[in-house]
Length: 609
Image 1 (tube, rainbow, N blue to C red):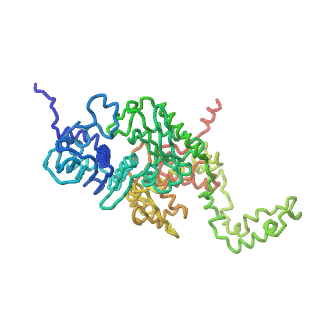
Image 2 (cartoon, rainbow, N blue to C red):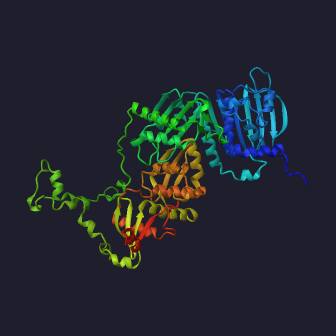
Image 3 (cartoon, one colour):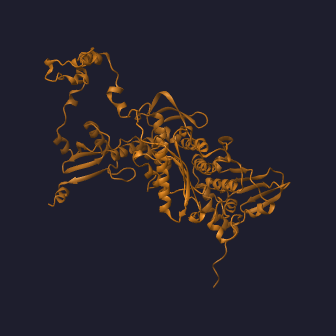
């Protein structure tokens, strides 16, 4: 029998390894930026073309490499960071495994120029599919310039799995933010297709945070600074008024390495306690510095998931540090004087106040008592003991009643509706649930879940067939976005137009909102787009959805009436009728139940019958 186990050729082994390290252009950006930081650079320029698919170039002014080191850097597991096994437990550098450049070279075409300060000439290396095509001396500045061209050119199947340019660019911006936020003392630039996206002068952490995430945070940050024998914590948390409706702008760093940790996020959220509503999330950028021996950063290929030796003590320190910062700077809940959107929908605000209405109101006795000087205390005995017998005239005029068709004044018999087996609204419970009866029982309907289902099917139909109606804005609104949100909105614009949004690019990271879907309130245009972007960025579901489906989900969730909102009987009945005209009325788009049904048999069992 012949042997069947063989060693893989180097180029295949490198491509397999690259699949773990280089998953998309942003993965290569992360590795190349971290290499530049490790080289001691004080200025790093990132240049992107075609969302990284055709070019990713990083230019730094670090210490550079010798000719031998330049060649060795592309070998698998070749690294200057580790000499023995003990070094694994004292890692302070960003990279250490020696896989990055080898993995990049396995799936792209590479050009490297590098020179040390003590060398007159630098080294030029050209690599194609892990094979060195050229190596020669060259004239170049001190530091390193590495270009990665045509990512996955030799693995077409992998290239086909890449997302749209806007989506891939958004991931690149995220990685750029992670590295540049961790090292505010380094000058960074990001240029995409010839246009500069970021120009970050070196400075302190607060300056870098504002440069990256927007000037709206300038007066909304609380510094966190705690030093203990076990670890140090510094950074910023946003004041309660800076909180968002989704988990955005939340950054944790351990020894200057960006990490993801739901556990530590909970520590920060719990520190805010009663300062934030349940549906709001704090903004923060927190840096934890501790002995590298107390943390394992090698548990995941991307190094964004780490393991602490003692998670509970880190949790306690983070929570205490944030609480102390909030207390020290006397942060307390602020009153919100903005008008509730529901108020803007009431007839008193939205309907014109005609001369006929004015005449009717000013003729009332109640109006006279409050409008005539020194007369508010006088009560007319002709109008009952309280003198307020016609108080309703102040709010309701005869002309309003006369305009109501007779058929709307006659309410259908409850039993007529039940005979048709149409759920008939009985009442609203806890401003969240609608009780509706059937001919053989009743339903308890969650109003927010019901409205999400209705809107989801409405928006899904619009986006698949004909464009939804647009409500033209009387005064177009300018929307200023961060570069990462700019990239996201560019990606979503075609589908947003189908849903009824009319948004046009207006210079660098700016857009003009010309119109919104017809069911969105005027003057809420900017807020609706911002919330939609936040929900899309942090959309989570156990089910898998396409980008278009995610957008429809977010739209439905954003526009749905919320739990706790009082509804009129007519509003509830319309909601129930529209729900049961849906193709899947029993579950939300995410699979949560919309209603619970009770029948006579179930109720008898509850009472032990």
